[in-house]
Amino acid sequence: MTAPLRLGVVGLGAISPYYLAAAERLPEWRLAAVCDARAEALEQFPGPVARFSDHRTLLDRARPDALVVAVPNDVHLPLCRDALAAGVPVCVEKPLALTAAEASLLVELARHYGVPLMTAFHRRYNDAVRALARRTTGREIRSVRVRYLERIEEHLGGEDWYLDPARCGGGCVADNGPNALDLVRLLLGELAVGHCDIDRDGSGVDRRAVISLRGRTGTTASVELDWSYPGELKDIEVELAGGEVMHADMLAGHTGFKASLWHEYEAVLTEFAALVRPGAPAGPGAHGGLAALELVEAAYRCARPASDATAAEAGR
Image 1 (tube, rainbow, N blue to C red):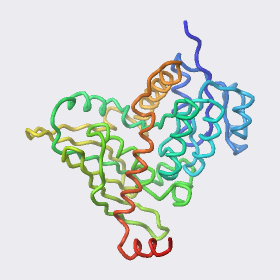
Image 2 (cartoon, one colour):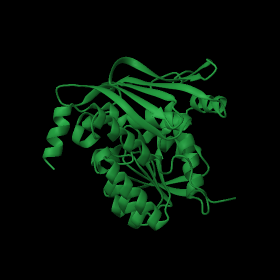
Image 3 (cartoon, helix red, strand yellow):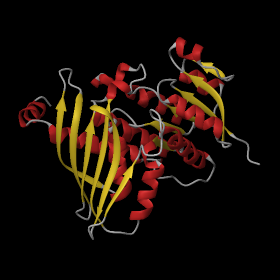
Image 4 (tube, rainbow, N blue to C red):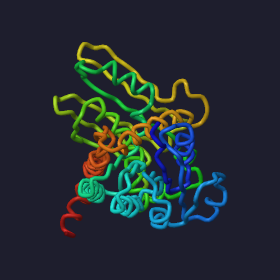
């Protein structure tokens, strides 16, 4: 029997329990080390594994077979860069980096070192999404609508960096946008942003957005994002060329807050294990992180008032 892969997890915040639970359930993995810059996070971690406050020390001493990066968006770049340079495969939370330029650098580093790099677009592993993707395979799609609505304050898990545009990259477009846009890419392939409407609060955080997109064959799509929604709604609607409408509710059948994430992250780590094994081909989540960030930045550019765009050009 193949020995389990030794996994390191950097970042013990709101999303880490899903990775840790998946690693415990899956025979492909053995948790070897965890890391967090916050002493209180390490103190509360119950696992009998090595604990580190610096990711470079983890890489040097624990020597994991692979690394999960689940830290704030603004530090994805240095952590992933160090892991790739050390020859350690990386599964990083979306977005891949803070900007498309940073993401492009990481993709190039992964290619240079020949090391797997995977962005954890966990919603493409949702059981309802997978069923919808199977049902639409080989059929002509007329339009796609993705809704990704929640009240962000209920999902922070004590991590207020989400509401800091400098650390998050923006707001709902920067953070939830990659997951929602990846779902459209899953169904339609490459996309172009046509228009984007964004509502921001007084702190400059985008709270609501509607992004209009078009596929290569002319198929239309829309992504609706909301960080002020009373509750939670996450679904996909697909209209086929013949008029048939298909629907996938990502939360259906999963009772309890964020309950759908348990099976999604188990599937993420299952695919990541396959990528890490020698000779494995790159999976669909390997470099899609760059494409998603390019769409995010295109959406922000489309939403800027003309005066802002002129000022930005003049300041170059």
